[in-house]
Image (cartoon, rainbow, N blue to C red; front, side):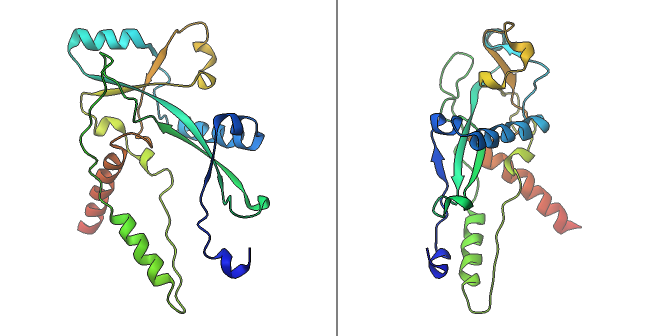
Length: 212
């Protein structure tokens, strides 16, 4: 790749299958690092695990709607179009938004996504202006943006409980639980309303900053 052509690479992340990334030490480390970072900010309530059947039964008896989902890891190679020396493994833990069920096992229904495309528009404007002579531009995402929002601030009375992959179970769960579930505390990529849950506090913060 020539120096001039490298400026126009898409730098697309190449997704690895679970079988592929589990066989690569660097990829496995990247996935575990993502889990560790999420556990560090208490993205789930590990201190209060419950059996799935108990949570579902309690919801049915009280008439309270509970959503059940799962989280799972993804792993990509960043800069996959460049030489291997430039490759970097990126792990991401996401919420399976396409498989969310209520306490009766029925598919959960969410309101239509409500976020705007303002950031996409701004990014395109920056990209366009940065192509002008003697002009440079840069756009960056907030670090772990979605997870900065707490689920309890937006989900109302409808709690969300998740299954963790067995390789992320605390040792105390092994031979103790059959199907443990924990409360999802942080907004997570993949949730059908993740963008909306993120946009609301950001908009509020911006308005407050403008007022002061």
